[in-house]
Image (cartoon, rainbow, N blue to C red; front, side, top):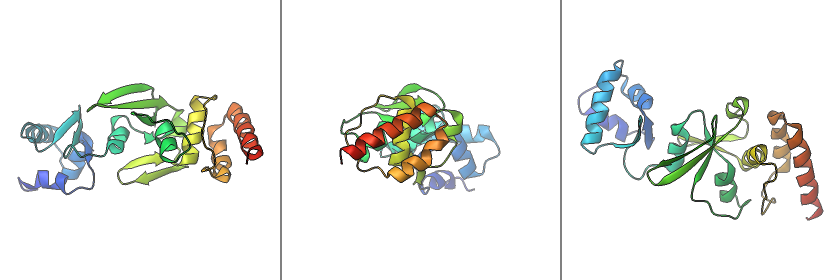
Length: 194
C-alpha cells in the first residue's frame, strides 16, 4: 500500500467505526507496531477520532449502534433500544442497550451504552438477529425475549407488533422453563384483550 492509501482505505470503507484489528486487516499489515504508529499519527492530525482505546471513527457522524457492538464482542443491539423503535415500549431512553457477555454501563462521547449479560450460548446464537450495515441488531421478537430473560416482570405497552409464531419459534433457544411459562401467560393475556 502506498503512503497516502492507508487513510484512503479507511475513508472509503462502509464502516464508520473501526477497532484496531479492523484497521490492520483493512491495511493488510503484519506489523502491529507500524499500524499503531500510523493510527496514532492520524488521530494526532485529526484524520481519525479516537472514541475509546483501540476504537476509532472516521468523523463525528459515526453510527452509534455500530460503536455499541464494537466495545465488547460478541454483542448485538437489543432490549429497550429495539422495543422502542418497534413501538412495543413507549418510554424514551437516552441510552443504547446491548446484549453482551457482561453487564456494564459505558459512557463514550456523551452516549451511555448499557450492556446486559446473556448466557454465552444466547450471545453466539444468531436466530432472530439481523446484520444491518456494520452491526447486529435483534428482531423485535428476539429483543422481547431477551428482556424477559433478564427481567421477568417487565411491562410492555403494546404487544400487537409482535409475530407470536416467531416468538414461540425462538423461545426454545433460551432453555428456560420460567420464561416458557411467562410467555404463555403473556400471550394468553394478549389474546384475551384483542
